[in-house]
Length: 311
Image (cartoon, rainbow, N blue to C red; front, top):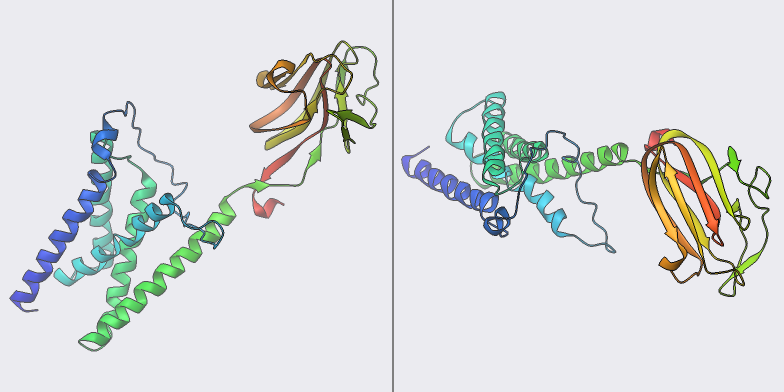
C-alpha cells in the first residue's frame, strides 16, 4: 500500500469515527435530554440485540427500526477500514473492538448522553464482524473493482443472513398469546348462586343483547367473592363487564391476583355500557373476584403467554 493511499485511509477512518461519535453522543437532542435523566443503569441482559425490524407494506418502518439498523450497519465500515490499515487477525480485531465499544457504552452511561446497553455492544460488534468477513472475502478477488464488488456483495449477503437469523431467533424467543382459557370457579362466598356462578342466559345492556359463551358472575343483589386457581403462568386476563338494563347504576368489581389488586371497576367510572378489559399478569397462582351491586362479569378467562415451541 502506498503512503498516499494509507494517508487517505487514515483520514477516512478518522472522519468516519468522528461522525459516528457525534451520533453516539450529541445527535438526537442528547445534551438536552441528559439534563432530565436521574438514573441511568447499565443494561446487562442481552434481550433484544437479535430483534431486527420486521418490515411490511402495512406497518412501514419506525424510528426504532432505523436505530436498530443503524446499530448494525454503521459499524460495518470499521470491519473494513481497520483490516485495510492493519493486517490484524479476526479474534484480535473483535477483542479490541468489543473493549472499545464497551468503553463507549460506559461513557454514554456516565455522561447521561446515552444508555449503556449490552445489546448495543452486541449489535455494533456483529456489524463490525460482517464488515471484516466481507473484506476478507473481497481479498480473494483480483485487484481493483472486482475485489470491491465481491466485498460489497458479501457484505449485503451477510447482513441479510444476519437479519434473517435475528428474526428467527426473535420469533423463538418471543412469547405469544395462546388459546383462550375460560376461568373455572374453585370457591365462592356469598348467597344466592351455585358453585358455577350465575346461570348463563341472555340479557341486555343499553339495549344491546348480550349472550355469554363461557361463564357469567354477578353479586346476586349483594356481594359475591369468587376464587380461581391458576398455574403460576404469565398470562393476559380478559373479560367483559357491564350493568344490565333496569338495574340500579351502582356496583364495583375488584380483581385480586396473589393478594395484589390488579383491576378495580366502579359503576361511576364508565357509562354502564358493555365494556371489555385486558390485564397483563406476570405470574398468577390464585385470583379472587369481588362483585358488588349491579355489576356483571362474563366470559372471563385468560390467554397464556407461551413460546412457540410450547404451543
